[in-house]
Length: 353
Image (cartoon, rainbow, N blue to C red; front, side, top):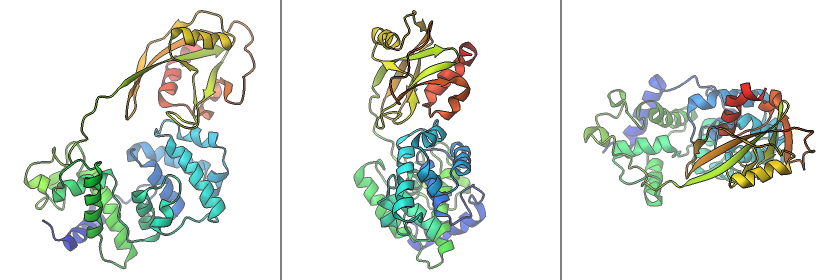
């Protein structure tokens, strides 16, 4: 096994030459920008995050601007990025920082971890990148690197295995007073997992630990880390109503929790008859047109969607409350929509307009 002091020194040396240095949130100690990127990068690829990150900074240049924004504006900008609880926690966290911490993020891992939406690893990343703190991160990329290099057996999501990885990760931290060295080490762990030690086809030939890595030496790259134990993914079904009045469609605000929490979406029902009743209650007595069904897969289940199109023949009733709105298609970008709903409406644009 590698000498622990050797691991951090070699990783830092590799990162400074081969690591990533030009990502939009790098080369700064601005805790707001670092925090924003870390939340967006949770379970999301860098290439997907970059345009969202740029749009958020343009609309909300400071944590106070984000805290003071309506939640609907935040959800609209987040729409399509997925895992929407992150957006709700992002808004709550900004409000806590702005109103309880004077607009300044706490500097310690423990204090950061108390903020909404910030766990132990994310808190460590923010503390390291913003304040040069000597703190341990353990995201998916890091777990993969540690499992392969040191031959850690077991599924990293299992508590016993995860605890062992935390202990290992803490033992590997460089004993350095130089904040830049600590930051380079933290970034190096992320970079190694994201660019070389990837899930599918790791580029072992270019890895600084190739000669010592258990997975590489033993040819176990596909086995380490151990895969999540397979479970049957249940399937649910819903009927969605695309109710059209001129160039507007009917949208409903989702509850604040659950799937697509806080987003605008199409009215739904549990079956065909119930959807017809929803259409009737909203002033549509015309027959509903069957549209092509499609599916959307979440982490824990698959959702089969049966969309139906309805056309208003008279003046629509007023929206029942603030959670229902007739949305002009020309302004649809201002509503936070779930990705599959937006995809459905985009596919129908030629028909609806």
